[in-house]
Image 1 (cartoon, helix red, strand yellow):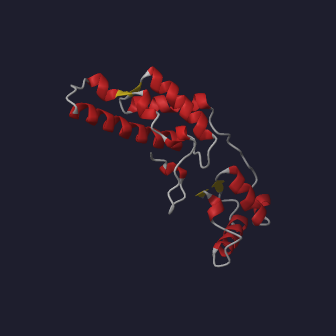
Image 2 (cartoon, rainbow, N blue to C red; image 1 turned 120 degrees about the vertical axis):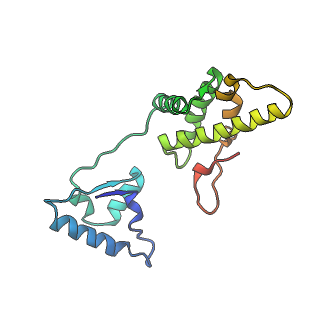
Image 3 (cartoon, rainbow, N blue to C red; image 1 turned 90 degrees about the vertical axis):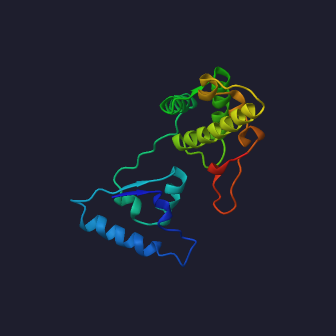
Length: 180
């Protein structure tokens, strides 16, 4: 059984939550079927630590706790290169530098999600590129194949991360919706 973001199961501060019953059932199944069941709980370390402290007995029933550190900026850049190449795009040298700077800033902000944040950022960068190219074509510029596949520095630098923050959508509270 794989439970992603397991800390959402139970919230101690919500008395109308059915999480306590869920946890009790889970603990019972883990105890009774321990020979036939493997339970993997995943989530951000701080949230998981609080979850385990809020649910007495749970931590001791989970035999192994493994912390996977965030990727380094270099590893995230490798991921970004793989993603852009897989979609037949390329980052110009200046765009690579800008994206590396973006990652350094973004990692320090709330809700950074490693590879998912890279993918989301590249989606936005490609949208900025498309708008830039559309505007260039509207002004009469003939676009080349190289123009169409090359992400430029200006496409990356339109992110609010360079302005000192990310946009949090009021309904979702998600920093991943960091649109300019």
